[in-house]
Length: 405
Ligand SMILES: Cc1cc2nc3c(=O)[nH]c(=O)nc-3n(C[C@H](O)[C@H](O)[C@H](O)COP(=O)(O)OP(=O)(O)OC[C@H]3O[C@@H](n4cnc5c(N)ncnc54)[C@H](O)[C@@H]3O)c2cc1C
Image 1: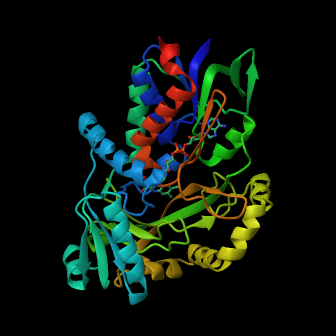
Image 2 (image 1 turned 90 degrees about the horizontal axis):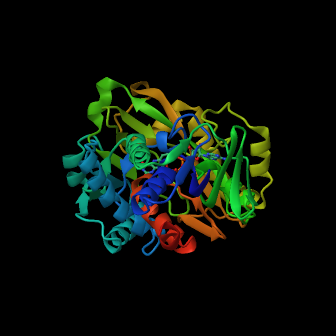
Image 3 (image 1 turned 45 degrees about the vertical axis):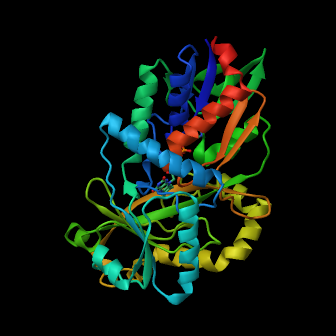
């Protein structure tokens, strides 16, 4: 069988795109190809579960636009499907004067991005919202929430299946070639053939792009984030999300306090170089992947620029007391004994050849192909809007209206 479109990747981005294409083009034959035996085994099933408001992102960027749109679409979707989410809100807290300028910049960004209901709080306002949190000034975002993104994503897969999409789980795409005008996805379990292909491969998005002759850059560098979990008797220390003022030089948001849908409170994640793209512990090492990352010209430049931050993150990763020390800036009562080891996630972070970390979402197109090359946080929040964006792009590039007629 030759499908009209094959989407590679059964994480939230691939599944949102699959669902949207199936909705728009009921007449097309669509396949989704995922290497694992289950959906959401990687970033989508291993994240903080935050519905981001859209405050952080550069006005006019894909992130700014698609996060705000995606958040609203996610609310509507969850309402329609009966998927529980909670508007627990979020504080971005400055703990000393040096952070106030950056906090004001974020406030401006949030306003420009159209984030609703932002409030600037003083120390007393912070205590009112989060009695155990200390800070001198904070932005409160009432529209930030929490949800189980893997549950949302499974629901996308269910919708797509109901609309007739064929799923190929356990099919690792090892090469992508052209034969007789058709694109052939080779996997150890056999080929999947399609007229058009969309790749949403998360931690392997650069490898998939390379299989079709796409540019080497940007390259994915995996950054692991380890979480701690608050002991149940200490959950009262936190009501909603509490975040630091992020370092504008670094693409990650800093260790934070996040309530989960099951009642847990997660602390973290930090950001350390992972020694394997799907390496969820310090001891997971994939030598070819590690060598590949270390020998990329941009990596040396990145390491030279960030070695101090990187060394600090690695130290805090290995020494629980130091990790908790970073969190005590916000909740001084927190003790290392209040925390249990938690899960880990690995972020697919794109890096340019000059060593800069690519901040925005990156989409790339070629003949008959669309690649999602960078979809880091807040891509879960943005997923429905990204799905729309990919479907618009595919519609244009693949001339789908004519094909569907
Ligand atoms: C620690 C952490 C915390 C985060 N917190 C948040 C948050 O609170 N809110 C938020 O909005 N976002 C958050 N994010 C970001 C969000 O989780 C990701 O941006 C999003 O899940 C990306 O989805 P994806 O489908 O692109 O990638 P993935 O979920 O990684 O899915 C990619 C899929 O492609 C498959 N694949 C790869 N290669 C192949 C191949 N060759 N053949 C077949 N299949 C292949 C993989 O197996 C995988 O299932 C966080 C991410 C991390 C890691």
